[in-house]
Length: 151
Image (cartoon, rainbow, N blue to C red; front, side, top):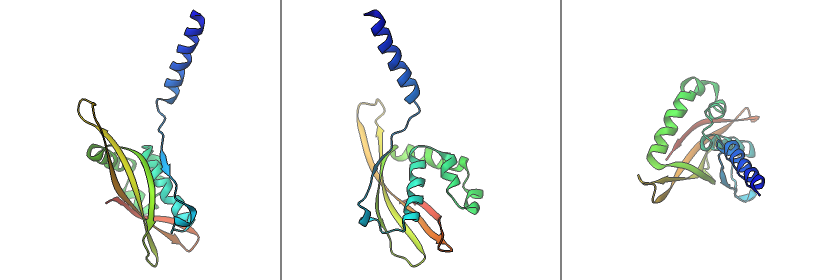
């Protein structure tokens, strides 16, 4: 029996070690007809949000156009993300809401849910903040991000 307990405890410890860096992203996927954006633009904005939620500075910055990357670096990402987390908590989920109608640029509006605790971690709070990702098509072939910010 002691060998069985040891095995179970060992397996649990390994599982906790392996998953300690895991981030679960809850994405509430809209119905296909609810998405008003070009699928390429939608997917690009979605990847940007996943990178933000997972705290993946490299991927987030890589999704930006070259000119923007020169100004918004991985260090900028970390500072911005820390500021958001200090203000509203850790991001836990996101949902696409709509794409605003404009001729060439397409502001996509997403809802991001955050979770935080009080000082002694006895109470959990959730907040929702809107995130706007402005996308467009470069030569009608490639989706690009022209701007983003929390509202």
